[in-house]
Image (cartoon, rainbow, N blue to C red; front, side, top):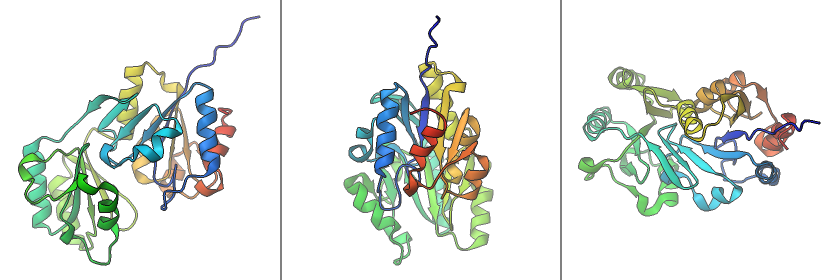
Length: 269
């Protein structure tokens, strides 16, 4: 009797709203799902809009991840070895920086080793910059004074409440960058040609993983490309409507064992 060979799957998980909630709480069922997936021999990858420096290893890597796709597909690593990194050329990010300053935008320039932020550009009532500062410590530096050494692969713009200024930003950078509209007035801006799907494609090519063996889990608009690209896609039940519309399967909310339930649904555990 011929034994059926089990193919190793490659599974890609967004962090915020998928693995953990706004308090960085991870359900026990999610931890158990990861344990069982690893027992089956599958590859587990983080796939995040966060750049590499903003992904906390101590909290996440012990869950069993084999690699990290970061910065919306601009960075990839496998077993702690960097496989690719697409950096915005210095002259180009300097050009963008001047545009953002002229528009009076609150923004963060994001690289694999540092995040750049001028705190005074953010409104006092916002805890956004404070949260990043607390998480990154010395790896968060000012844009001002570091213009000649910016190491950046993407950037975020927040609190563009003036619609005319927002349209001006779109006109200035829309040709060369993809603008991902998140909740509220938060905009994630990535060089054209890069997204979570291109990162998955690149890592799967390196590891010789067939497209039909890929799964993705997400909850937001920066997950849409990977949800549409992978053979099987799962949106969290409490995720954004766009993510739920793009996914093959909508699972339970994060706090209601969503990842575990999806893995059971597909017979992965």
